[in-house]
Length: 439
Image 1: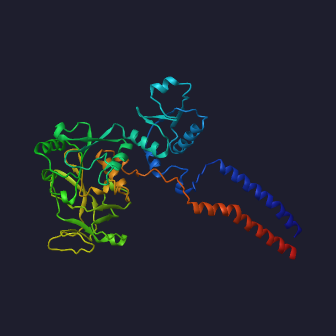
Image 2: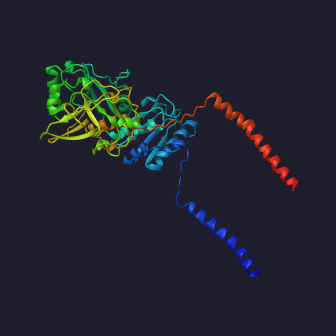
Image 3: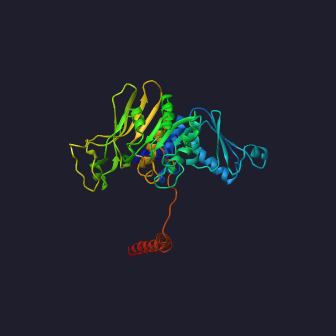
């Protein structure tokens, strides 16, 4: 018995020492970091990680600030998150005081402004943040400039407009990702520029003139890509273009009963939860909203390969009468779903890509922030611009880092720390003291 006690007393420190040694050995084998902050704000978001993993080769960054400055340390800490994913990111800190010639040469105007170099292409970045860095890297990864040309002169939605029906917010997001915007009135230019990546026709209010259609027809026959956004009331416009693409628009407005399960009382506000099997919607699981859409039906053709992108449920139909809170399906005149809201076209003879959407509000300033509307729109443009590697990278890279408290909540927290907690600790101490004294 005595010998057993001596053995146990010796065994414990030996086992404790062994555990300490093993833990010390494990700690230097592999570092595991877990971000437990809200929204994982101390680590990169998934879109940034997805982009960095696709970029091959060296990324070199010239930062015009002293490394030892507070701003320089902030930049270094920010890029350290990227370097964990991609070690071949090189930071060069350049002292503005010691290199005035470089400051003038590269037109450096802001503290910690930087030049990001990747594959013989350079971009300026003035205000470092994860969102701005990732957008700049996406622009560099895209390679050559992509010009999105917006047709103008027929009442189209403006890419620079701030009204609810315009596309200003959407165009700004595309611009930050290297998809530059240009407005074009073909009745004046008489041609579509050769550097056009995608021609965008956004809900025109009047029809094309014969000469204008001939210019667009020539552009499409030469393999140009197109995004055509239309609305139910405009479905009869551009009939020659619809004929050229071999499609027709069904009359009426799409309504869908599935919206009731999402507490949507407006029958013609179409929620899309499930998506067809197409590269544009690959691994896409965000709900999108389409207000007042028209259905698109393709003809059988040997020229185009059609693919559905956005399809309504089986509980939808094209409502021919005025849309009210309660509508009924008329099998005699209306077509039961699934119905196509968006179709993708690929030419059988070239790499040409086209998307036609029977709804344009989903990308407007009013609706762009709903669900996955922005993400879906950018996916469409990436596919049309043949940037397939960028399609599956989610759009949102910025998280909400602001934490605001009302004056009432601030007062409650302040009083709690100053008075309530000390009082609780005091009372607890007195209770413990009294119990020990009573023994």
